[in-house]
Image 1: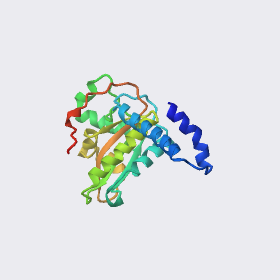
Image 2: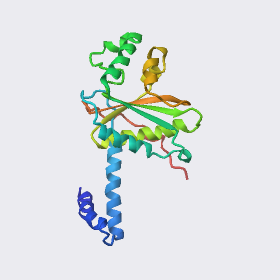
Image 3: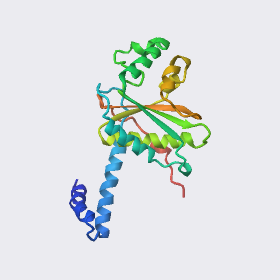
Image 4: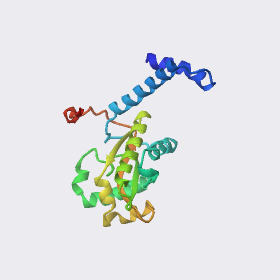
Length: 210
């Protein structure tokens, strides 16, 4: 908190072109680093959301963070479709329930996207070998930036598979991906209505090689 306060007080001087000392740069860098690390370490996948969709201005910021992810040769082999229309989400969910009747037996089930009111669909260029990795980096940027804004998310594979099934063909078509692009996965976004605890991570899988 002390570092953040110092950095905040110094920002006007930096913006006005005052001589930024090395110490000032280090303090600012340290405070930013800590905020990023804290966001990464506290983020959780959310599967219960409040009903309201995420404001489009905030989603615009989130997807712009996504497209600023690193990617091979800056080819940007992705396409993004943001859906917050309840008719779309509920309509394809009804088809999903018919194909998977047990899914709706859970009393907390509201839609097939882990109950998220806003869904981002990611398409990738099937001709690009790096596109799955690039799209993974895209997703991480979006989910981390969303969490920093108080917005939860959950990366989804099985709903994307259903979207590519014959039953959901009409809804997939509405996403209007370009020729040569294919839906890879989707991400649910919304304001969290739960506070899940962190699951253990296997730190012993990390090795420093001399």
